Image 1 (spheres, rainbow over the protein chains, first blue to last red):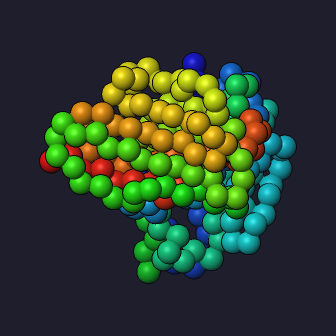
Image 2 (cartoon, one colour):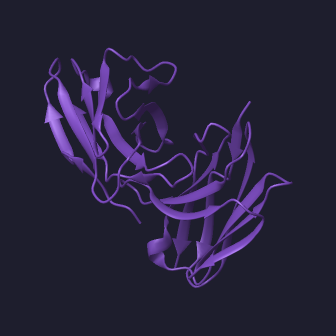
Image 3 (cartoon, chains in turn yellow, brown):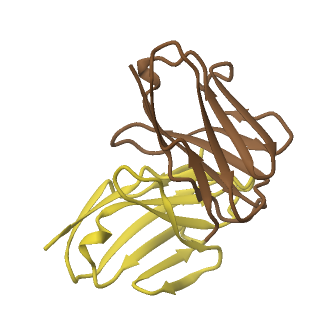
Length: 109
Length: 115
C-alpha cells in the first residue's frame, strides 16, 4: 500500500534549526512536496523535490533521497510565525498526491 | 505561485439546505481540481478529483449524490453539498493544478457550519 510517515508534533526554540522528517512508500514516484498550513487556513506550497539532494529556498530547505524513500524539511532561524503544521506529500505514478498527516511544529520563545 | 480563489469563505446554513462552493484558478488553466475536507485538528482528506469536462472521481466513502462536483471550465469547479446536515460542517478546501506533473495550489478554504 501507499504510506507517508512524519512525526505528529515537534517543538523548537525561536532562532534555532529544526528538521522535519518524512518517509514514503508509493506506487511509483513523481516527486515530493512540502506544504505549510497555519491553523484555520489552507495549505500553502513550500517546496518540490524530484531529484536527490538538497533544495534551498531562503530559511527553508528540502532534501530528498529516492533510494531511501526519505525527505526532510529544514527550517533555519526559526520565527514564531513558523508555528504551523507541515504536510509532506508524495506524488505517485498516477500523479496523485499521497498526503502525510502533518507535523505540528510548536515554536517557543 | 499560482492563485486559486474560493467563494464563499464562510457559510452558515440550516440543515436540509444545499450549499454551493466555487473554486477558481485565477492565473492559470486548471486541468484538474481537487476537493478536500478537513475536520478540526485532523489531516486533509481528499474527497474527489475532477478533470475539466469529465465526471469527478470520488474517493471511497464519499457520496457522489451528496457532494456534487462540476468542473465545467478550465478555471472553475463547484462543489455542492446537497441536503446538508450538521455532520457536514467542516473546512472544505479546493486545489488546482495545470498539468499532471505540476504543483497543486490551494484555495483559501470554505468553512461550512450547518445548524
